[in-house]
Amino acid sequence: MEANPRSIGRLPAAFLTPGSSSFMDFLADHSPELLPGKRTLPPLQGAIEAPHGTTIVATSFPGGVVLAGDRRATMGNMIAQRDIEKVFPADEYSAVGIAGTAGLAVEMVKLFQLELEHFEKVEGVQLSLEGKANRLSTMIRSNLGMAMQGLAVVPLFAGWDVDREKGRIFSYDVTGGRSEEHGFAATGSGSIFARGAMKKLYRDDLTEQQAITLVVQALYDAADDDSATGGPDVARRIYPIVTVITDEGFRRLTEAESSETARAILERRLEQPDGPRAALL
Amino acid sequence: MTTPFYVSPAQAMQDRAEYARKGIARGRSLVVLQYADGIVFVGENPSRALHKFSEIYDRIGFAAAGKYNEYENLRIGGVRYADLRGYTYDRDDVTARGLANVYAQTLGTIFSSAGEKPYEVELVVAEVGTSPEGDQIYRLPHDGSIVDEHGSVAVGGNAEQISSFLDQRHRDGMSLAEALKLAVQALSRDTNGSEREIPAERLEVAILDRTRPQQRKFKRIVGRQLSRLLEADASASTPTDAPSDEEPEESED
Image (cartoon, rainbow over all chains, first blue to last red; front, side):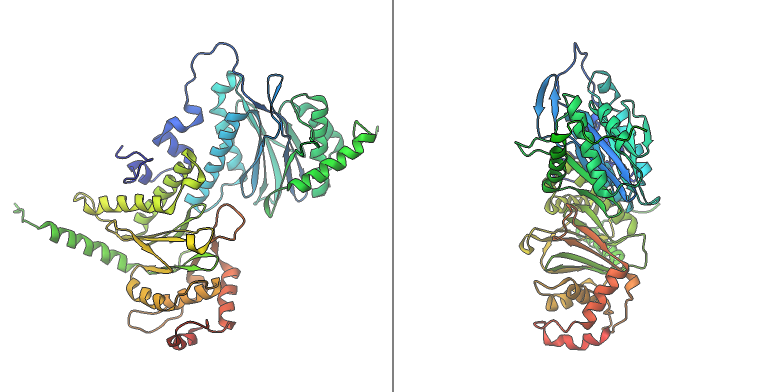
């Protein structure tokens, strides 16, 4: 290697070698120590205490897909952070929300965003939505060693499929297993409750606004029954992060928009604490 | 058996420079201009797939004239450099100055190393600032030197003539349509002084737009948007404070 990439000098040969359009492949060749999956862990006694992100939910509607997350990070029984952000744009037409070890998850998202951007710049075209979902799969799989020591990262990936012209949702397990979800999906500690709520509220003809209400309701229900999920915090003005992806691309709701939805729900819940009731039969 | 002749270093360098210059001159020229809201790249390129301009990073664009495989190689090297730097530090730490330095070192080393063929490329690295004062344009000739340019720059075959044409007519704060029109005028002048028409579908146009809300400011202008901009300048009047000798060129479109 002729030069250190951090100093000014001639571009090292690895930079000018024709090859893969993947930034991760380039890192693996050139500076493998920067790849999250390539780190060796010392033998470990007991579990590591690190902040964990909790619930992420997503639902599709005819014009796109909504991905949202609560704002709490916990460390054991302690609240580590009240206003953590766990939903990120992956590129113009997709977003990723993460549950699990916050530090690793944020790093994974950063690398994933870069992977998509790098491909787009080198090739001149975007990866297909399937291609993006598969790349994320590979990244989670490379984190398996960490996951087995209790530092799992489990994302939810949602995006607008430009070819099929519809919103699609992909969920993952710790081993990188990927499955497409139809209608709605949830991940993280409160996901059981969120999924239950969405199961009763979801319809396949939701409008964008209804889909937004649906995910915030689901997060409310998750926070209601799971201590690790945060509900809307009116006193500190901390509300869920809600993102919408349509054929116009990624959009994150402003704080005013998301607080409006959250407050409207809160208002109704003061009268009906368990939320809207589905028909019995 | 051949007898090794003595070739003075000065002669060797001159030969290499001439070789590189000839290679670059075979390619079509391209121009990079500042306008009110950013920087515009304009070039004649019949291909839709092989680009002369591309995005390197959030605020940084790349333009190249000369041999495709060589500048493509440098372009990908630049993308890798920028992405790695942004990943190791922060997105704000990737600058055109840093990138231009790396390119200059790379080109310079290749140019002066006897074992390698000099690259037949001339590059432009441009970064759009938050205000026009923050815009940076660097021209990188084949030998590894860096020229810090202001306002407008041309590279490629007919670069000198086009540059002087642009220097006389380019002014600060032009609109995108005005800058685009000036660029097309400059490019459509032949070496012998005559003019030829460049149809919109043979133009490659890209901008670094500081008003773009996204983090990534690079955008290609194609199809209807391009023809609309070209038409807008046909109906618009002559830029008022442009030099008076511009009149003859107006007939072109």
